[in-house]
Amino acid sequence: MAMRIRAALFLLVVLLPLPAAAEPACHPLTHEDRGYVVCSADPATDDLRLFLKTDQGGIFGSFGRLNQALAARGETLAFAMNAGMYHPDRRPVGLYVEDGRQQMHAVAAAGPGNFGMLPNGVLCLEDGRAEVIETRAYLADPPECRYATQSGPMLVIDGALHPRFLSDSDSRYVRNGVGVDAEGRLHFAISDAPVTFHEFGRLFRDVLKTPNALYFDGKVSKLYAPDLGRNDAGLPMGPIIGAVVPAAE
Image (cartoon, rainbow, N blue to C red; front, side):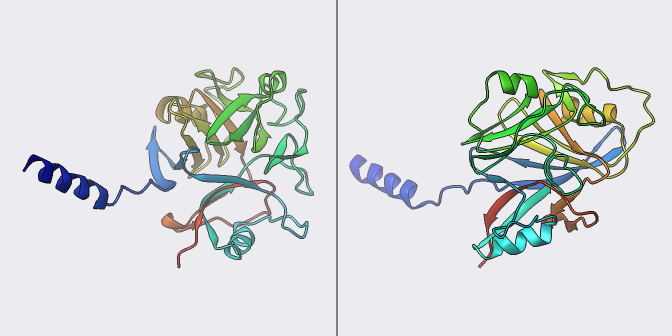
């Protein structure tokens, strides 16, 4: 009898479907009476990639054009956003690595604009894990990034806000960025309305709990989140980061 019970329990366990892995997802969030959308993903299970050029050498520039290229491979975007600063011809300003191939080197020197507000940083996607790393720390010991994009400034550095952020600043833009929490999950965020660096950094430090977070951009911040009905248009983009999933049959 005991053997029959154990056999039945074994069959029950085998036949029950395993829980599906959670797909990357976006949701609205309010912090300090300011609205944001946060998209979270697990680099251990989710397919996160950076995109810049088409197979023909042109710049994707938009979520629609990128999704068309993915559709030809039976794939689609679960979500996407612009991922780092770029020149007028949409070449990345700093480090850019796509599918293991470095297309632009890291820039460690201080300079004009937000990118040059040191410390800036690098988002590095390795196989199964992700890091946001201060640029000079990255250059001192470069990890094996399958995908990487540099931007600036850092929003949160080892749990502290960037030292040049002012709590009473009047510089406000719609902003987007990314951080990695203590469990290794990535959190991408974009503000609903213009915010200061200090306000945006507090979201990553205090709510998303990311010890290190990186600013992507301001005036060109865009999000593609079909589950929320978002497909932001506007100026053409440079690098795009997206979570890729199989297209629905």
